[in-house]
Structures are given as structure tokens and as C-alpha cells.
Length: 324
Image (cartoon, rainbow, N blue to C red; front, side, top):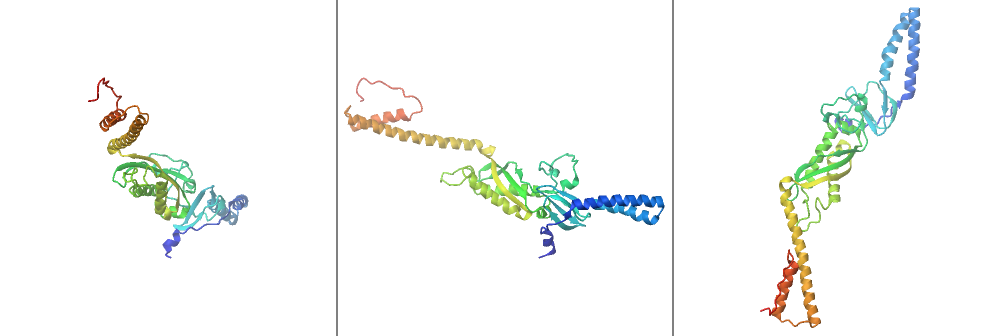
């Protein structure tokens, strides 16, 4: 394994408790100040110089080693440009004061990347912003125009719930893990959308973007997870939040859907009309109401079908003579 790959492995630090060290620094600082005052009174250089050095240089530097880790947070530390370790457990700790938290993706309290917001003045503690949040966060990816498996342009938008599970990879493997996951979501949407039609086709395909939302969501989640796994990110859930035809074909597709609905309705009407005509002829024959030859039956069938299948109400014509 190369040295570069070793740096990318997460090294969990176990620093000492910060409370004893804080008490030691405070007590030591008070003692050194007292000795410094005593040295000034006695005019002893051998006391003034070391106490001043320890009080005003050493102890302030040691105070910089006190670190606070909040719940569901992690901090990645570097020492003089080299990876030092990661703290992912909440608590109050003390470690090497020359260690610095490293995070090139700073997030505010609402989970928004600060460098993605324009003209924002941030007045927060730098150490807090450089911590890596391990909380579940939501990425509402804006809708984009893609093509389905049939080549139809559609608009689709997704909501992705994700979290960082390896702070070291999230910080060192990618430049900005929030931008990275957003970009990979866009690529995954295009990859998955072109595998399915928008709606069930005439051939009766079982899966479609509109009719198989659960299957498509699982496929989308797997695709995104495969792309962001090396960055220490876990995809908890992915759901389609917006799905529609693109404006340029929406009207044509609406006419197509209306035509399909009209055809299906007409088919039902014709099936019902044929059944009613058959029932009428059978009732007339069984009750001996009238004896009809084949030609009269054909005429009756024609008239009944026109009445039952017409779009408008029938206008009857009374014939007082024969039908000939």
C-alpha cells in the first residue's frame, strides 16, 4: 500500500480528557503569575524570565489544544500538512495544540455549503465551521431535462437523503463533498432515466418512471451510492420529487393520452352496446313480441348501435308504415 493510500485511511484518535488538562493549565497559570509577581518584587531575573515565558507563551499555546466535539460531528486534524487523525466521538478533549482542523467544505447550521451562497457574511467560530457533520442531510436537486428510454425529453428532480460516514474520506478524497454529491446525482439521474420510459408503452412494459416509482428510486439510490462511496458518503434514501414531460412535447403527449382515453372509453361503449342489442333481440324472441326476419334484425341492430354509441342524444323518427 502506497503512502498516499495510507493517508486516506481513517485514523481514530483517542485524545486525553480536556477537563484535567484545563484545570492543570489554569492552576499552573495562577502559580506562574504568582511566581512572576514574586520575581518582580525580589527583582530576580532567574524567576521573572522563565515564569513570563511559561505564563504568556506556553500556557496560551496549550489552551489551543482544547477541542470540543458536539454530537453527530467529527473533526479531521492535520499536523504541519500531514494527516494527524480524526475524532468522531462527542466530548471535551485535549490534543497536540499545533494540530489544525481541516475541512474544505464548510457548512452552516442549516446544512448549506457556505461557498455556494452569494454575498454572505459569516460570523461564526472557524473551528465549528471546519467540523464535519455526521447528521443526515437532504439534497434537493433541482429539476433537469433528460431523455427517457424512448427519447422523449422529460423534466425530473430528486430528493436525496445522505450523511457522511467517513469524515477522512469526505475531506481528503474530494474537493467539496456537497458539490460532488450534487454533481453525481445529476449524472445518476441521466443514467437511470434513460433506462425506463416515462409511462407504460403500448407493448405493455411493466416498469416506467411514472408507474414504478419504488423500483426506480432503489435503482437511483444504488447508482448514486456506487459513485459516492469512495468519498465516505452513505445514501440513505433517494426519491423522485418532480416528474413531467418537457414543455415542448407536453401538449402533444397530453393529446396522446386523451386519444388513448377516448379509444378505451369507446371500446367499453361498443362492448356494452353489443351486449344490450343481443339482450334486446333475445328478449323479443323469447317473449314472442315480434317475429323479425334477418333483414329486419339487421336494421334493428343498426339503429340500436347508432343510438347507443352516438355522442349526442338520438332524434327518433316515427314511421307509421312499413320499414320498406
